[in-house]
Structure formats: structure tokens, C-alpha cells
Image 1 (cartoon, rainbow, N blue to C red):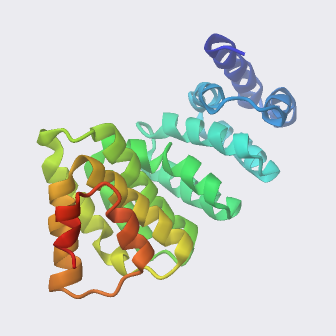
Image 2 (tube, one colour; image 1 turned 180 degrees about the vertical axis):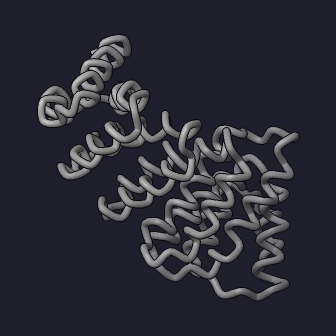
Length: 240
């Protein structure tokens, strides 16, 4: 399958979804999910489906989620990505619902890199506000998603100097999570700090020094180890 074929399949699925034929629509998608289809192609399918009416598309996404396939989460993420400009709050709510329903790390990361992560790039202020409530969510996977979203933003920002003020905002977002105790959530937050540290090492080092040395906030060694991955020996020494 090529990109054009994936997009065409997505349009065919959407045509069925729009007339309420969710079963037939999934009959087209199911064989693709049963194969080792590359994620970029699955995302193209999802994006084509997501261009439709949210009320109809969301019913179909629930059908896809019920099967709990790895590729299905990519299709869902691609569809929700298409809804960000039309219904940002709703897309976040549905993403959270699917993260909880999936209850597994790879679905969390797949969705985090396709919904809140891109939203931080295109709708920064609203996205960061919506993510703030996820930091205290009772579900560890939802909390993990915050770090995944920050990782995605940093990966795309790639150290752009003009975006440094937003780095400070993202570090403020992650600050309450520095004391996270659940390992699965720690890995997500640590991932976000790790990628920020790769592209904005001085800002992250100063922030870590403030957290560890000045505020003496409790933390797990795993999070600090991840955050220091790309820092120099000199920068790491400041944390000792």
C-alpha cells in the first residue's frame, strides 16, 4: 500500500461511516490492521476518516477502539488530529478517553504524539491549558501523556531560539510532575524532559538545578536520569 492508496481507503471508509455503516466500514479497515501496516499509512487512513463529520466519525472510532489493535490507535490518532482545528476541546476529551480505555503504554504514546503533541504546535495556549488538568489525573497513562506531548513539541521545535519562551512554559507545566511516583508516568515525563534537554540543554539544566538543589523536591532517580540523557558532564555536575 502507498500513501495515495491509504488516503483512498480512508475516503472509502469515511463514505460508509457518514451513512451509518460502521460495520461495513470496519470490514474495510480490519484486514489492514491485521497486517503489519506501517504507521504512516495507518495515519493517512485515519486523517482521511477524520475529515468527516465528528458525530459520525466518533462513533466509528469507538468501534475501532473496541478491537484494541495497535494499528487502530494510530488510525484513531490520525482522525482526532484532523479534529483539532474544529473541536480542540472535544478531541482532547476523546484522546483521554481512549488512553484510559487502551490501558497500555504504546497506545498512550501513539495518541500523545498525534493529538496533544501536535496541538501544542498549532494551538499552544489552549493545549497547555487543557494539559494542565491531566497532570493530576487519577489515571497514570493520562499523566504520562503530558510528557509525551512535550516530547513531541520539543522534537519538532528542534532548538529554535524564538521558541525559548515556550520552553519555560512547558517546564512550568511539568514542574508539579517532578514528584511523580508511578513508573509508567515517570517514563513519559522523563521522555519530555529528555527531548527538551536535547534541544534546550541550558534551560533544562537551570530548571533541574532549581528543582533538585534549591527546592530539594523529591523525585525518582529514573526521571532525573532520563532528563540528563543529553546534558554534558559539566551540566550534570551542577546537579550534584
